[in-house]
Image (tube, rainbow, N blue to C red; front, side, top):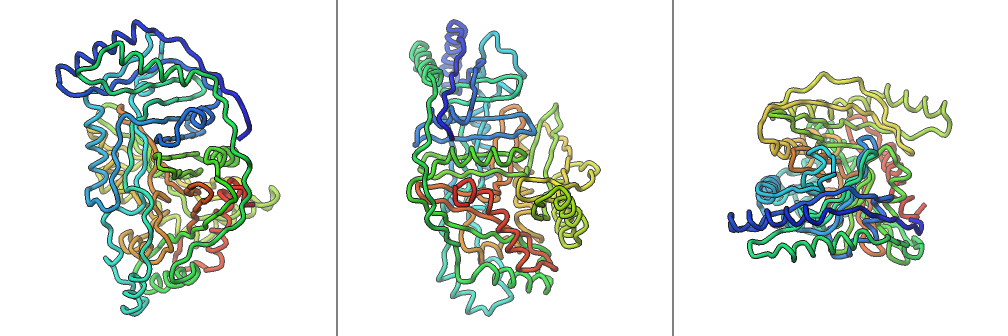
Length: 507
């Protein structure tokens, strides 16, 4: 990221803010418990990513979301409330998420500058976070791999125990958030007000934070690093052998599809800058959702995903839903003619279209199992990214329910879709957890945001990786079906790796 300056400024109505704070303190005294207070005003911000990089502390949770096709950028840091479910905790993480939302949003007070003219949803308190790919308490021995002798299986499980890097749930309410669209830019400041607070002291806290954000932002990336090593992460068997094992089980009828991921460790001579890496990704992949999540412990998860697992919006007693079916890939051509030829080849590929139909069927079945009415499907088309093109079918649906938090139940039912898991899901996921070389953490899992007005978007955390100091771990997966060719699947993952490798300066 080049050295730039981003000047942010706006006026504030002190009397209006003070009046709102007095009301919040009064409510806290009546209820006898702290009250979440949120204040929004117009803001001017040239570059939200730069503001996040320059104004957030390393120990603070941070979140960035840029979704060009929805004209939306969200940048947030700090935390007034958060929930984290560690991997050893057997609690239902989706229930924990719903409890967290209800606890903190139920009595919240939402205020705004008198001249701020925005829709209600744009003023609502936002919550950011992610779920891990595997549910907590999952047991890789739930299903025994029938392709190998039982004694080898036991030996493998004893010798290799994957490291767990991230909690199975992380949600947080930020201390500050920028919401940027082409029409408006809004700053939201959140605070927890106690019954014993004094209005002037709360006012000072909020104004000091606003003053900090309004100062000119000057950010310079660290000295350019040099990548000196790329290592494939491997377990007991190399990836191609695991693919062959999966094909054996598919041919024996144990499952129809399984998505197997490879991982690379990228080492540099100095620390990577996550904001610089994300900046390259967002420029290279403007069709994708660029995202970053750092929960303040020195590890950052980031990527540019083309896939939405669930987008939802509540209207009256109905929830509108969307999920992307994205499966089947081929490289881009070096010329217009070659690119068109490759696209036609993908559209007419029996193997890729079968894989794509598995994903469509699994998403529709799971939505219908929740009581949703699925809309007639549009035609499958090509989603063209800078280095790869995919088969893509958007799936839309509606469900009648007055409680929009059913969206998290639907998300739980959808994840993982057959695009990143397999079919049947349980057997495929057990196989993945047994044989993939490392734990996925948040890779290929839901990451995103929601707000108190019942709208939100969770992307699939693909084209993604983790950064920790001078090390990065990146992932790429391929869907294995009956007529998959091992060499072709390995080539597909190599193409997908290119996005992160370029952003990391490795190619």
